[in-house]
Length: 127
Image (cartoon, rainbow, N blue to C red):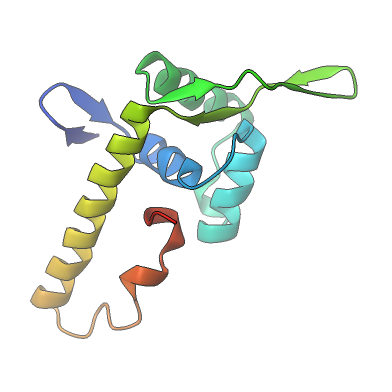
């Protein structure tokens, strides 16, 4: 668990879901997972059941909200989600912490992060 503020704990996978939703139009659970796979690889892919538990938890915490535009595909309703205002604030807080982490790692171990340009980590930056 990552502690953000005094009252909110968030898991690493919840953090990744929020980061993946940053700068995005409304996304379905599958689209979020596809974005994570493209950026981080398959080892960061939650099971289908887990992805919806993650979304439900984020929605209960009011960090994301279901959009009013729902698609229909093959007689199935597809739910899409976007960051709430609280979620956008959380992403900015998290991205600041990630930046500090990489800067700290580089100061402790010069050269270990030379290949990382924080400006190119699109999942963490605003448009």
